[in-house]
Image (cartoon, rainbow, N blue to C red; front, top):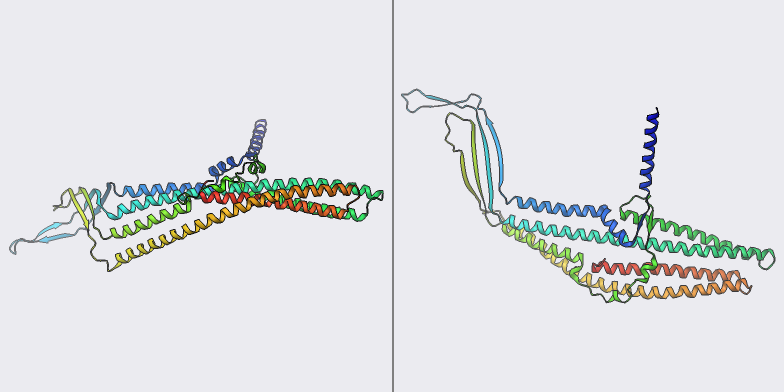
Length: 433
């Protein structure tokens, strides 16, 4: 019993330790968060598996051009059948029984020429390039989502901080007003006014806390961690704003070839061209050589077949009733479609670049303007608070000025998100995330 109790205690300690490890706080800067997501996000893992699968397909295609060896064996029993023949009518017929036979075959073949194989191997290699580009696009999308979630989480924390500070200040004014009412220096209506204000701030705080939890859950999802993993974001929103290059980012030039969507359509173009080439190769012959060794395990009575044979197989396409021509025309149409899509994408990316630069320039102006509005609104609010305490301003004036200040803060926080998202969109277009 003593031993059993000790084992149970050790098991409980291990469980407790495992639970503590699972709840370990994860402290991450933005760069660390991006790196963590790239290591553990399941979409990234699937994209990496797709690249690995493409390489296996290349290996498979190459192996078809290398020597192929097969070993086979057969057994035949003719159920006692016999063959009769006679060399002349005077002689009695001769009988040869069909004895059971068994052969062991060893065959080696080597492809000498196949146009389809050559073009097909090139197509598989292009396919691998496309999966590699798709991997980079997945990586880029994960980075974008991590950055957005990280920024949103920090802005939601800042929003909670602003509301809490305003809530503490309003509570203090509320308590002071209650004291003023008790001595006849203020009316009961003033208390009611601040009670409404406190209720509004409480609701705003709960909404901001729910928004924070949503942002953190989205970040956890992108990081590939469980929903109950505690997160600590070591970068502040001020860090990103203080290091924001307001002028330099708009001066960066856009190179079309760096865009991942454009790289993908270029690979599609080359793949369509190879598809046309493959259909043309269907008109060419194919040539294969082989060597076969046959070991007679059970020989028949009469056997003239040799043990060693070498040969060539030549296949020449002659007539397909228009099928090959139709396939070639389909491939040409697909190539033309891809070229049209490429031209459309070029136009779209050019327009998108202009729009994103406009959005970013507008977001910068909006951010700087609303940042200034916060300072002005706060000074007005402080001025009304001083006047209210001196009895020369009403509670309604103070409430209105406070609401204006909170609206300015809300607009300012929204401008931060808009600014960071506008820069992020332009960076994604330029492939500089």
